[in-house]
Amino acid sequence: MSKLAHRVESISPFHVMAILDKAKMLQASGEDVIHLEVGEPDFVTDSSVANAGIEAIQKHHTGYTSATGLPELKKTLSAYYKKQYQVDVSPERIIVTSGASGALLLLSSLLVNSDDNVLMPDPCYPCNRHFLIQVGAQAKLVETHSSQQFAIDLEQLSEYWDDKTSGLWLASPSNPTGAVLDQAYLETAFSKVSRLGGHLMVDEIYQGLVYEGEDMTALSISDDIFVINSFSKKFAMTGWRLGWAVVPEWAIEGATKLAQNLFISAPTVSQYAAVRALEDDVLVGCESRRQVLDKRRQFLLKELDRLGLPVVAPAQGAFYVFVDVSGITGNAMQWCLGLLDEYKVALTPGDDFGFHNSHKYVRFAYTCNEARLEEALKRIEQYMKRKDA
Image (cartoon, rainbow, N blue to C red):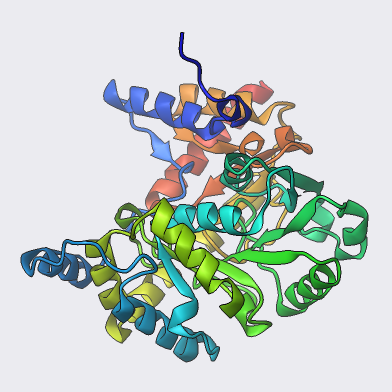
């Protein structure tokens, strides 16, 4: 009898998918479920961007592009970095991918050998460690603490590093905490990693969704830092499945070979739409959405404080708030399941993002409007009172 590859056993399912599956079942039975679990706001792609995709189809632009991306899109992204962040990024260094997930798979294959490990903070985005499994490597999660905004203590970096460590992967803004790493931290990280002989990769897919602190790119520090990004979040293009990686010049040839073999090319229609997404009038709309998210963030932070639910990381960016629920439960996963079952509010348990004290935390995604957020918090308050009774 045929068997699955061993690596499949090493990949954990999203715990949030159990929440989402149950939420969908409840909705199908007519229940009013409020979704604060999935990282996808209730925004739709700008109509002019969607029309650019339609126009690409009408003009029969439906064949393969270059493996590294449509030249026009790469040039437009290069100009975007210059205008938005005053950073020179040559188009040749930009590798357009099938979502940021495609970029993560490409960089895993490009940078990490079998049996290597990569340092990441605990908590972090779970798929990062699963991409490493695909290349026979593993994540080495470093315990972090709320007192340090869940950032790795760089003074101890050499203690975590061993002869099998390939690099350090960070994210700013962070999923699940919403924390933003400042330039000084990233400069120190790059300096220390370079001295240890490794690479630094920074996940910037929530770039442009910063409310406190500096909205920057690690590319302003060095051309030798690897960066991934996506059109999903800031540009509200989740279903278009389009992202990119920026690599140093010395890595272009290797990245190109991998792109050719792994993907052939990213979705062509999506690439034509993305060119339109980077134009000034669409960027104005992106800024309007950022302001809407900021208002939701401020409302949520105020209400969580009123309910006595501690926010344990500075929610400076993305659209997440990381909350400590250990004062009311010893098991965040079971608390989330009970909340969904009894009061029809879906949240993400901390178990998805790491292992150290993950049972204490819950991620709130402020991805619905303020009226729905208000209703969700009313239900949570009722749930907390019932649990106390």
